[in-house]
Each structure stands twice: as structure tokens, then as C-alpha cells.
Length: 229
Image 1 (cartoon, one colour):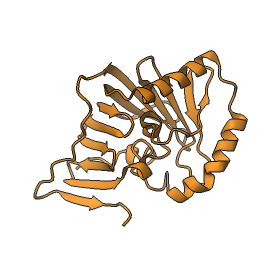
Image 2 (cartoon, helix red, strand yellow; image 1 turned 90 degrees about the horizontal axis):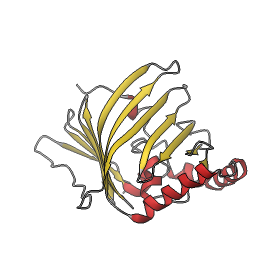
Image 3 (cartoon, one colour; image 1 turned 180 degrees about the vertical axis):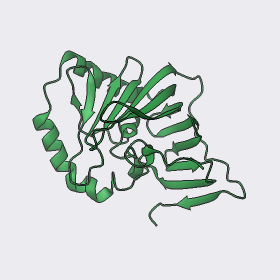
Image 4 (cartoon, helix red, strand yellow; image 1 turned 60 degrees about the vertical axis):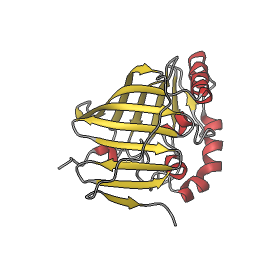
């Protein structure tokens, strides 16, 4: 049986399979407050911070396909590694991606611009949600330009950070580090002082575009459609 991994609980922000994280009513209610708070509290952009913002804008504007390996680790408040996963991310701004976990188990998240799906091989189940609504307010929303106006602050060390507002926020702070060609690291700080760290490497620009295909539905595969009617 596939283990119940923290990504689906504390780290559901990653691919937004937790509706509570970015419920439309919460985003609408907090949009003005978040923008005001971020602009008032964000420190002046340093050179490193300005470079990070420029790199993010350039990555989104280029719309070039990118493929990269990732290692994801969840660390406790004491720094102990609680979980480690590896896989590959393929991304094509503005709205397509494939996020595949390959070790220690297999799972796939993807979007063709209209749908976001989660394929669980062990459960033989595919869960489907609306792409734009599901991705709003997540790291992939930043990279994919799904929500380009999400307020971020530039840290002096060159990271971009975002602190969600509201009582229903599912994490305390998100940090994204952009390199010259694409994302290099993501950090999620939760309310238990745990940190999920994702490091990307082997970045390449494939000759062909990313073409996420909906997983093949076999006779024993269940499709759960969670889109609003």
C-alpha cells in the first residue's frame, strides 16, 4: 500500500490537491488584504532580490519547456529527515506540467491547461480538478503565470517569499529561489516548524514542448471528478 505521505497533508500546496488551501472564497476574501499587507511589509528589493524577481518574470514570459530532476525532503523542527522522495518535473508556461514521483513510490500530477489530475498507481485511481482554480496560490501558479499578481517579497539572499493571510492558511511561509535558467529550490515552512525542501537539478530545455497526457484509464481504474458542476 502506498504510504500516506505528508505532501497530501501538510504540503498539499505543491500541486493544490487540498481544496482548503486555496478555496475560491478564501482567495477572494483575502485578495485585498494580502496585497496591502505584502506591499506594506515587503522590504525594498535588494540587488539579489531584484534579480530573483526578474528571473521569475523572464522564465514565465519565455514560455519555454523545461525538464528537471528534483529531490524532496521533509525535515522536522529538529532538522531530522522524516521523508525523502525523488522524481521529475516537466513544465511549460503558462499552464502545463507533469510532476512525477518515481521513488520510493510512483505517483503523477499533471495539467493540460484545463484539468489537473492526480494519478495514484497503487489505488488505481485518478482524481480530476479544475486547473486554474486548483493551482491558484501555489508555487506552480508562480512558475506557470496562472496567478501572476500573487504578491511576493524579495529576501536579501535572493529568495522570493510569500506568506499567506487568513485563519485558513495551511502553511506559514513559502520560499522560491530562481536561478539563471529556472527554479532551483522551493521551501515550505509549516505551522509545526517542519520544512519541506525541494531542490531541482539537471535542468534542460527539451526540443519538443511538454505534452501532458491524461493517464490511460484501464478497466480497473477509477476516475473521481471533483470539478464543480
